[in-house]
Image (cartoon, rainbow, N blue to C red; front, side, top):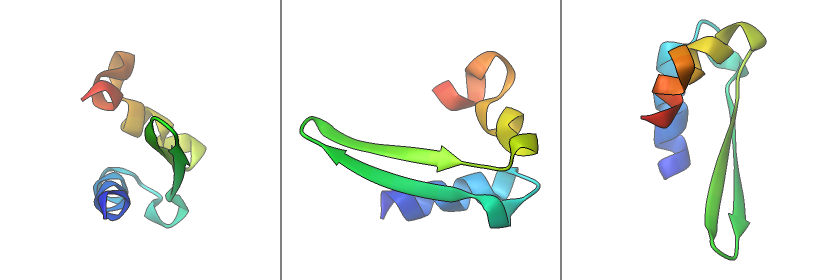
Length: 55
C-alpha cells in the first residue's frame, strides 16, 4: 500500500512516469523501498542538495 502511494507521488513529479519502478525489500529490521527513475528525472526526485529525498 505504501509502495503504491510512493509510486503515485514520484510519477507526479517526473517527466518520464512510465519509467518509475518501485521495489520493496523486506529485512529483519524493516522494509526498504527502492525507487528507480529515468536518469533525467533523478534530480527531480532527489532535489537540490537532497532536500526532496530527505523530506
